[in-house]
Amino acid sequence: MKRKQKLIDKKTGAYIELDSNPLWSVFDKVILLLNDLRSKKYILSWQLDKMMPKRDTVQLAYLYFIPKPHKAGTPLRPIVSSMNMPTTGISKFLDKLIRAIFDKHARSTTIIDGVDLIHRLEAYTTNAHLIPKTYL
Image (cartoon, rainbow, N blue to C red; front, side, top):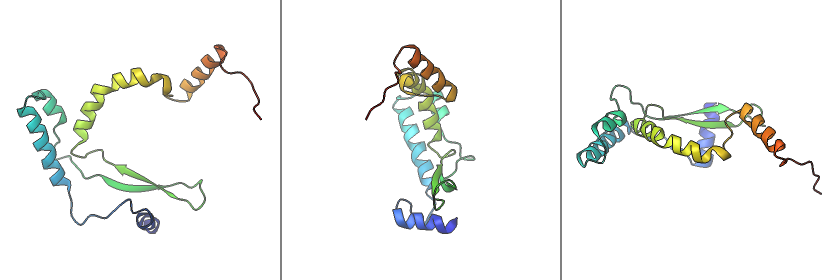
């Protein structure tokens, strides 16, 4: 697995190995940005609290690979885990703000799960949109 990972890195040039850990640099920049937004009164103190990263839980994002055994040569799917990055609080806060608007406007083009797909196909058929045709 490690050998394949190195081959993917070398082949694509998409990933580089870092010489130093940028976690605390990113952490400090996020703190500075949030404090600056608060001092300029762009955000309220409760919003600052929601977005502020916690020093004892932050982690650097890391890359790992999951094999695709159903594909020839068992290629690897790269996964980036960024669950505890210093920017996670900002991301979660913005998601809560925007999610309702996004869901409302994207609902017609979003399939939630298999049951939702079946219901949509039934409605599509009921409304006579699904007609058997053969195209040559």
